[in-house]
Each structure stands twice: as C-alpha cells, then as structure tokens.
Image (cartoon, rainbow, N blue to C red; front, side):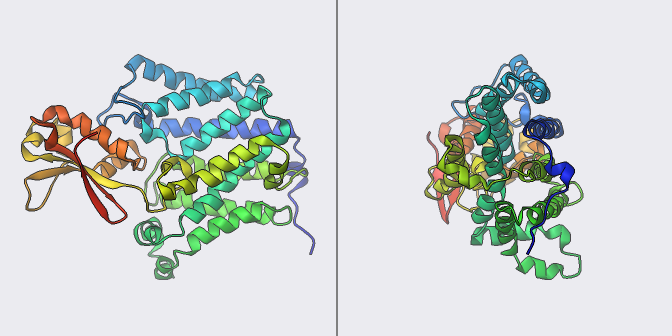
Length: 382
C-alpha cells in the first residue's frame, strides 16, 4: 500500500526554515505561558516560593529583571544566529525554577530543553544531524513515555474520570468513564505512528485531534485547570508538522547509533522518568506525574497557630474532625492561586512547613503529614 505524504509546500521546507518556524512557535507559546500564569513566575506573592535549595527568595527587582530578560531572549531567539538569546532564555528558566520548584512543570521543562538544544546547535556544540532527532525525541516522549506512565490503577481511579468529566453528558459518556485504558494507549500509539515514514501523516493528523481534545478538557471551557498546559497543547501539533514532515525524515531513534546528543535526550526523556518508580527522580519534570507514586500531603498546625496566621492563610485552613488541629491543603491552594499542579515532593512540603514555623511557639506545633503508597508519615524535622 502506498504511503501517505505531506503536502509539497510543507515537506519542501528546508532545514533552516523549519528551525526558524519551530523557534517562532515556541517563543509565542512560551511567552503566552508566562502571561496567562503570571503569579507562577513572581516571587513576592501570597503563597510562598519553594526553592530547590534553602528557603531564599530572589530580591524583587532581580525577580522582575530575570522575567524581563527571559521574555526578551525568547522573542529574540528565532532571529539570533549565535544562539546567545536561546541560552540566556534557558539560563533564566533554570534560575527561576531553582527559586521555586512549582515552576518546574513538565511544559516548562520542555521549553527549557528546546531553548538549550537550539542554543547549543547555534554555538556548534551539537551538529545539524543531532538537532532534529533531539527535538523529535522530546515530542515523542510527550506521547510514549507519558502514556506508559499512565498505565496504572492510580491514574484510572484518581485522574481519568475527572479529566473526561466535561464529556460525561455526551452520548456514550458513561462508556468513556470505563474506558480509561484508551487514554494511555492512544498516547503511546500516537507516538509510535510518528516514528515511521509511512504512518507519520496519520500521526500528525491524530495529534491535531488529540491536542484539541486536551485543550478543551483542561481549558476554560472544560476543567479550567493547569494554565501552563494550554499554550503547549496548542503548539504541539504545529511542532509535529514541522519536525516530522520533511522529505529527509528518518526515525530519530536511528540516530542513537551515530550521534551523542540524542542518546542524552533518550536518558532524560525515556529513562529518567522510570527512575521515579524507585524514587530516584522527581515526578513533575519527568513525565511521571500520573504514575501514582508521588507524595500527597498537608502541612498541619495546632489550633492556636491559626489565630496568628495572616487572614488569607486562615481562609485556606481546614479543621481536622475530632482533633484540635488544622490543615493547609497545599494542593488546592497552589492550583487555585498559581494555576498549576502542586509539585509533590517532600522538600516542597517541608518548605511550606518552615514558612509557618515562626507563627508557632514550638517547632513541633507545625508538622507535615505525608501519604505515599498507602503509608502515612508525620514529619516534624528537616
């Protein structure tokens, strides 16, 4: 059977033109990501930052300066031949993430990898033969690795039904709620379709429908959740067309035999996520958010502490039934105020514990309740 082909005008784009369009698309999507979730990037806000190391906040002027430089670098990167703007944008992202792990969402991780890769290419650190395979592997991982990570009972029981809830009133909606396995299998299948020359057109068409559905389900007309995800869902089908449409297309996994950079990409995108199964890596930036092995928890305080807290924090507190203690539901608070999922790692919970400790007479009156794999832990020290 003859294979399908992309239209000539699309497949005829040369290497440099496709790279320029790729950067224009990600620059627009990244800028939109920052502007629709501004509280995520600003340090001085109601909900505190969760630094990767220590508890420091950036000085306010430096925080705004970094955001400005990052956005300017993103806008200039498509037209900057030296790659300096690309690398500056990647560096700003890294610094801002280091001062607040809540920013280290999967989408931000992908933007970081894209700016870093294009910058290294323009600096001639990686070759043209390595550039597109690396970028293609980042796209394939969003389908294949993410799909594999959803093949677990926790995703079925805790995530899937909520995600598709906007479709529940449609004919056959009740069947959808029982067909959770179709979600991960569809993602994996979409990625596999893009791997081969004869099926990549079908994969590209499928990506348009898939991301359109995701944009609806998570967007303002659906669950209205995870604003950082919205621009990424809109831009990914365009990136698929650019990266997988060329007449020179080769399965990116073949480049592993001859080029080093794609091997590093495979480690970061296809191996690192599975290390989370052994608790050797974080979940959020490694496609493992839905594997069900992350921490769920609260910061708990004695009742007298609540009276000392700022009013906006008191409004967030939930009293424990039959106990003289209150909980701070961090997951909901972060989702509501920052528009992104909570970063479910122990050190982030501890960061919020240390933030509340000055309001208590004794450090033990503020503690963390962590739940993981059916086990509950009370954490009161570092």
